[in-house]
Image 1: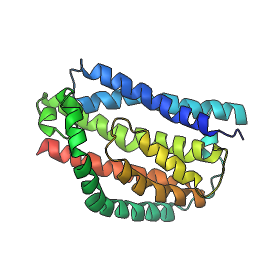
Image 2: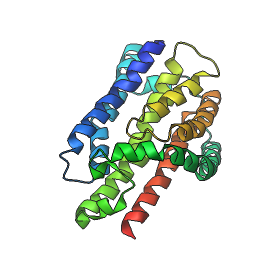
Image 3: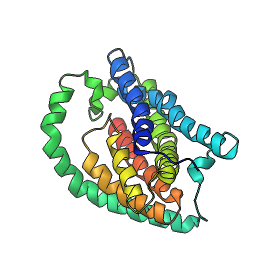
Image 4: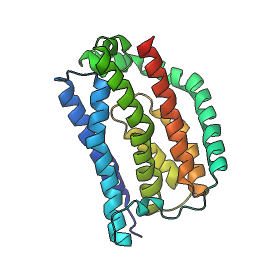
Length: 241
């Protein structure tokens, strides 16, 4: 198995997100669609192929064919009901943290967030639902559908394969802190959502640790999908009401 140094880990993590964030920032000034849809489309053609590309090429080198085997190395047998139960348990804990920790972090960083968004086009503020509602109904429907597909399936599955699968298993130093470190870097890599890092770390670090110890990437994958599904449902309800 190819071991990844900390320098390569940082390069692998922050290269795709830098490309996505920069392209999103530039194209956002010319967008004729909801910015959240623009982001999902850009993520599909930048973030996803780059992260999967790292996995595919590693698999080619290690196993002789392009696949996701490098992301699944070291994984144990999976009990579906236990996986879903553990994932849902962590999802419930995340819900509590979102009620107590997230509001505090949001309040502390609100001045910085407001100052930054005041210098950018209105579409960069994903919380501005009225902006999304200003588009024709077909555009809104497409936005909700693709946001759901990308945020619930495409994005989290790719990220879990990349972070909890490939990077965690191939990191040069293997100990109990490895999944925590990768979870911290995973949070920081969200350049497009820079104001919820404390919440993200507190939410993802424990489930990443358990998935690592149980050798079951599906725990964190299901958890990630659950969390994103919750945010998508909230977004859609806000848009349609």
